[in-house]
Image (tube, rainbow, N blue to C red; front, top):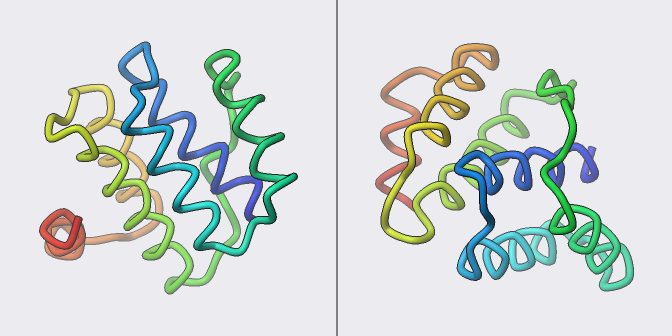
Length: 113
């Protein structure tokens, strides 16, 4: 599941066509906090930064708690540079609907980020 979360983070980071330094820092920090070892983090960072990810499944099999944790990471990444892009917000909105995350829960995550 960690690999899928990493792919989602990079997909969101690339949503506006480029990955900013602040997004790279946040992704690295989030992966470290999720217990991803240094060697694996470096491999995923190299792969995720080399090009936009091809179509990935956003239908992760996760518990409600895991979906909220993942969404929290994605929201934090979305607002990392103080500006959210329409493509990023669209991706978050689509994912929230698919995962059954309410607008209130999403707003709470945004404020927390």
